[in-house]
Length: 141
Image (cartoon, rainbow, N blue to C red; front, side, top):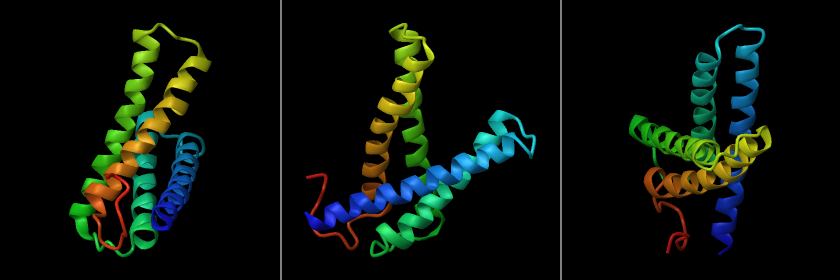
């Protein structure tokens, strides 16, 4: 139980740091660097994933021994899956349910979508990338 709590706190802290890196880089690339939105977001997404991977590999899951390009590639795939969950929530809300205000888009994409995406990312990170290595017990059952 305590190990699971530490894992959740570590995962959340790393996620916040990665989010900050993604947002800061995106803002800089869109502003002073003058890149287009898709190029800027693609580059900031990769940077955010890299920060999250390193933070989890060196911190939260340091005992799991997941290293190399395969672990990083699976980690990026898990993060892409999380991003797709956010887009799906936004798509269903905006186009399926007709909730088209900015507030509705923010709630569906950045609140509901982010919450569901975080669950997908947590499960995928601990199950597919950093397997049971140094963990005691199992959060997934």
